[in-house]
Length: 329
Image (tube, rainbow, N blue to C red; front, side, top):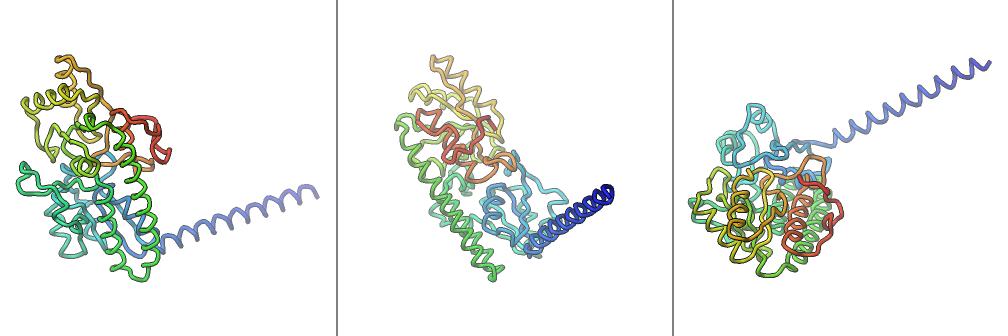
């Protein structure tokens, strides 16, 4: 009798587990079926905000993972296939993905292809003389400008899938709230740094929009593209600035070599001024997938907190949301 009871219990549990497993599969299938179209994106900054706006209505696939330099990225054969099969392709534009231009031209003949920065007024964009008439592409460094790019993505999804407008509207509103909170945090944290110390020295010139928005003098050793090279005169000029203004920290970037930054520190030390590396900033790519820094909000929160702390501001150790990793990227 006891054996029969035991066998009955085992059978009942097995049926329950099978039922749960079937339910899980059904839920998964339902979620997958909600994704009625496919979006392929380039940089992580676009991928993240597109996923937030699209929710479960679209499959969003990013081409460039953490640590990938979009200036140098060349599409693979698999990338081209993904782009060709997509219902919508979203890229940053302004020649950020300079080695993918031919691919975008080819793909545009068979699917919808959009540069998200096309939504910005040309007056909002920088046109540095050394960039041969082109605009600075690093728009995401200004949260309010990137919010406009997000609004463009939102409008694109609504046009493609008008039945899901209510979902897209709600998701965009939440994203806009988060970006506005990020901007407020940046304004308060960076505004508390003394005017004399508001100099941001980085490996390459990716922070001009950030500098304009938050009243910083931005100095990149290399030019706007990581393909450019710094010369001895560039290093000497920046060393002179560091010594004269008594700047306490310079910053490396996750996608650019530290060699030139190390040269700056050595040059300043030779002239009797100590400079530290304030940390590693995210410039052309976000943090690791699955991490807070692997989101657009987390990426910029990391940069703001690191810069503010290194230049003398009192900021939360783990950023505005208390989510930053306590280790360097």
